[in-house]
Image 1 (tube, helix red, strand yellow):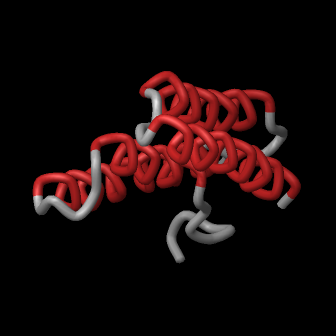
Image 2 (spheres, helix red, strand yellow):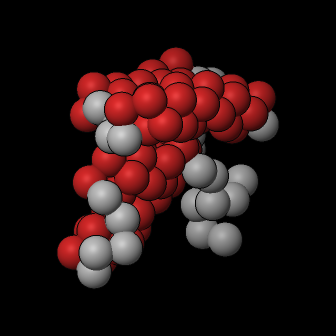
Length: 106
């Protein structure tokens, strides 16, 4: 549970930076969004790699599934002209952060 709280706190910090940058320059830089994706999936992977649970890679797979779901939704919003590119990429990055449940099958 601590790992999920850590990811959510990191996401909040990234969102604050994105909001400030969006208000100042009217765009969100790609490095901000891509670094959140890399950090979130990297943290999930290394947490699973060094975890003591035998069935621990479900935490990493949940991040990949969330990334994929939000990738589709973000692209639909972008091509539907509801979001700009930076907003869609930030949404995709948040998909890698958000947990779905404690267990992979629920």
